Picture 1 (cartoon, rainbow, N blue to C red):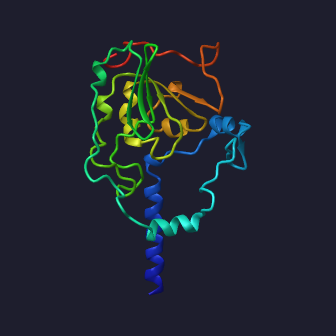
Picture 2 (picture 1 turned 135 degrees about the horizontal axis):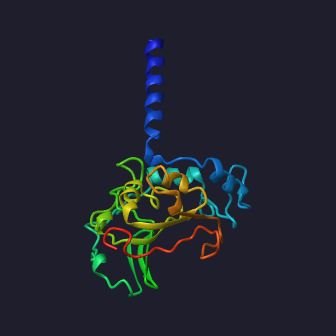
Picture 3 (picture 1 turned 90 degrees about the vertical axis):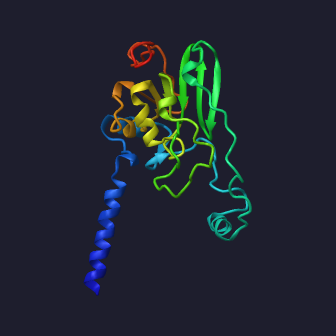
Length: 228
C-alpha cells in the first residue's frame, strides 16, 4: 500500500513538472536580461516592488473573508443572462491615418495614432488561465482573432498576467508585429515564443524609448510585413 502511494505521488509530481514546463508558462529572466532586472531600483528582495502602497484586499477584508465569500456568498447573476452585445470592426479596412481606438474587452485595445498601429494586451482565447475551466470568456465576447489584426507597428504588453499576456494570441501575432514594448523581464517569455531579441523593447517604470543613438530603437516601416 505504501509503495503504491509513493509511486502515485511520484507520478503526480512528474506530471505536474511536465505540465508546468510547457511553453505557455514562459521563462524566468537569465543572463544579461536578469542583470538588467536586478539593476532596477524598483527590484528588491527578488521581485519588483510597487512604487505606491497597493493592498491586495479592500479595507476590512482579508484572504479568509474573501475566500469564504467566494465559496458561500451569494451567486446571484455571476454571469450575463445572454450573449454580451458586441460590434465587430473590420480593422484591416480602416484608414491607417485616422486616429482611433477599438476596445476588445478588459485591457485589450487596438489604437491608431499618428499613422502608427498599436495593439495592447491582446487576449483572443476563450479563457484567461492555464486551465480551460477557469476565467472563461462570456458568450459574445470572442469577436476577434489574431487573423483579424492588420500589421501592428507596436505590440504593447503591460505585464505578464494571463489576462494580459495570452500565449496563443501573442504567438499567432508574431509575423504581423514590428516591435514589442514590454516591462523589464517579460522578454524572457517572448523570445522562446518566437520573437527575435531585436524586436523587444523592455523598459522599467518611467523608462524612455526613442530615437536615441545606440538605443536599439527602429521605427516600423510599412511594407516589410505581410500585407503592410
